Length: 331
Image 1 (cartoon, rainbow, N blue to C red):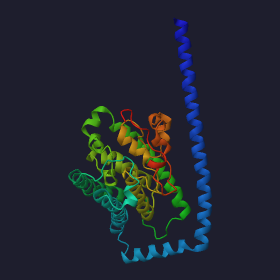
Image 2: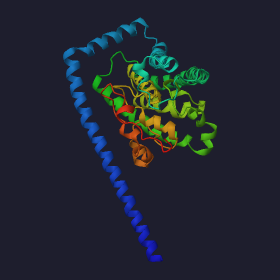
Image 3: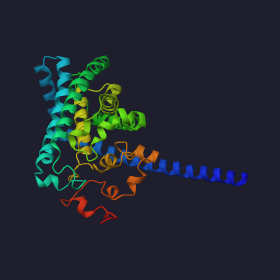
Image 4: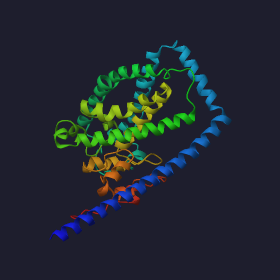
């Protein structure tokens, strides 16, 4: 019996070792491929900005804006870190809400992921979500910008009259994304702890078939630790320029809206990963999926048709038609 137990332990260790080795190989492949693509993108972008003089255009526009605001750093910060991202969020979600409420245009609604859900959306439930989102933005997100403003002033580069180069912005964007992935994944798993889930995260999961505006429909505590801090931390660590902060906040809000929108639209990032999380609750906690793979929290997802559909749609045929779910057993 002892020999069997020792053999079992040894086999289990070997199994875990192989799993770790496989995960590390996959991670190395993902990051090395990403690095190569990033390098190629930087080189191409450098040539483009140098030859098309877009850099001069943006630099001139920034200086004109700065002079127009008379160098008022607080007002510039509010416009860049609050107003512009809010307009990006509501502008994008405004289009989606028309489709959610009216079922039109069919160009959008035909790409619905969970067929038959939110068709049309429950307006009472929707208004509850909108009120919560507005409350989170006005009473949590905006006030959190106050301490961030003083942290950015301490860096003494956020309001520089010289814009960062496009190459440096791409470097920052990569770092912001990694920081967000780490902080969001672990804070998200934390609020899935039974005690915290019941009192905090359950609110967000009222929507098993999410829509775009639900991306920041959350309990105030969750909105702080999972929605806001993971996005704010990168720029605060890097001492980023307000233009970089504005672009990053806008990208983050639109990206999370896409992840929750419920439509797998052509040419946009796939929302299948996070949509599956809302459907099953205990899968796909992250943004990029790398940490989910390393921790094994995407095993169920990888065995589904949703995983096969988890790619950028490059045609006009909905993936729900080209890669349909298998028929249910009772059908």
